Image 1 (cartoon, rainbow, N blue to C red):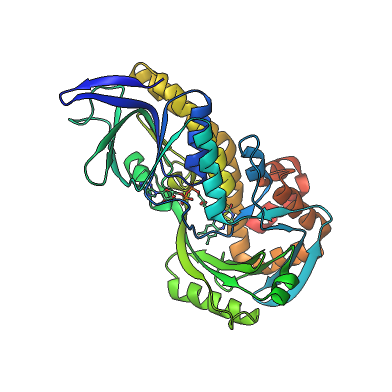
Image 2: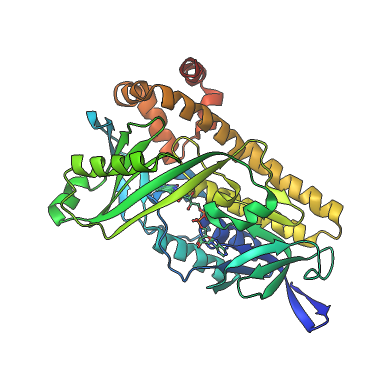
Amino acid sequence: MSSENSSAEGTQRVWDVVVVGAGPAGASAAYAAAVAGRSVLLLEKADLPRYKTCGGGIIGPSRDTLPPGFDLPFKDKVHAVTFSNNGRFTRTRRSRQMLFGLINRPEFDQQLVEHAQKAGAELRTGATVVRVEQHGAAVPDRRTVAVVLQGGETVLARAVVGADGSASRIGAHVGVKLDQVDLGLESEIPVPETVAEDWKGRVLIDWGPMPGSYGWVFPKGDTLTVGVISARGEGAATKRYLEDFVARLGLSGFEPSVSSGHLTRCRAEDSPLTRGRVLVCGDAAGLLEPWTREGISFALRSGRLAGEWAVRISEAHDAVDARRQALNYAFAIKAGLGVEMSVGRRMLKAFERRPGLFHAALTGFRPAWKAFTDITRGATTLGELIRSHPLAQRALTAFDR
Ligand SMILES: Cc1cc2nc3c(=O)[nH]c(=O)nc-3n(C[C@H](O)[C@H](O)[C@H](O)COP(=O)(O)OP(=O)(O)OC[C@H]3O[C@@H](n4cnc5c(N)ncnc54)[C@H](O)[C@@H]3O)c2cc1C
């Protein structure tokens, strides 16, 4: 479906949709646009598979958004959660049903990209996008966006999806505004079989010492992913929390195979999601659950919507039509993920103030544990739960005070 465009240098291909970044958001967007029969180019700066600092927790909404036939490469399936409050009051709760699954990101992301390719998207790795231009010499007409790569090459598209993660260049072009930035630190710790066996099917969640912080152990066969997250700006304290956490768990003696850090970002409620023929999704748009910092389902869900609306933008014949389609995308995001984020923001505020109460509720109050299991399994979302349960509404309002 891509068109040709005459320029002074000759004829340059114009893609229907160019997607920047091949994480879950970008692969999802590329899949959605390709499956609709459009020409799609997926640009990724890294070579694939690439490492991404992430716990790799796959909750129900992530699973439900995957392309048909996608076989989740689970490293473990979680049936039990051990909760502790800064190392104390430890209690394990179990469930007969699987709560959520654990994957390794390089493998998961690679598989998503392969699905997009099978649907017809073309992948180009080692391609770093430095900027997009919607006006000026590089742009042949008003229906086209120029995507400029490092080295100076320009790629043309009718619509662009920015899915380039938390340091997004496309997000800067769109003017994404943030109201929460956190720092996540993680170690991949290979452990002996006896230790791995002890963690099989069970994760640990520890409410941390800094307001809003928490830590986790996610087992993945012979390796444990151990991480902590806290508000940015407390780098030294966050690092100390991870060290103490690892020591407390008796894991200091094992050498991590990878230790890394990454920022997570949550958009401000009035942050733009589009500019002209450019849309942003996933971390690039600041779409992330503010309390748990769960981002894979946000990336997959917003990526899919971005791919679908990018198709419509690519077909728009003038700026007014393109704008209408872009606004529809923004509306779809705000009505779904936006609502979940606003409940998540309230949860985080309440959790920052009273982590002990959250801990007591999850470990000692059946409905709170049930809500946790329903959300992780995908039977409901935080937003739905608060909307439909007067008790949950009252509890959150009480926490708010
Ligand atoms: C410590 C930590 C733990 C987490 N744990 C979980 C978890 O257990 N479960 C969960 O759901 N979420 C988790 N998250 C959040 C989750 O990792 C992100 O929300 C998710 O990766 C967002 O996906 P994305 O596709 O938007 O961005 P990314 O996965 O970051 O992908 C962006 C891609 O764009 C590429 N790129 C960047 N810049 C350019 C450029 N200029 N040109 C071309 N390509 C570019 C990058 O190389 C990358 O491949 C965690 C985050 C952190 C920091």
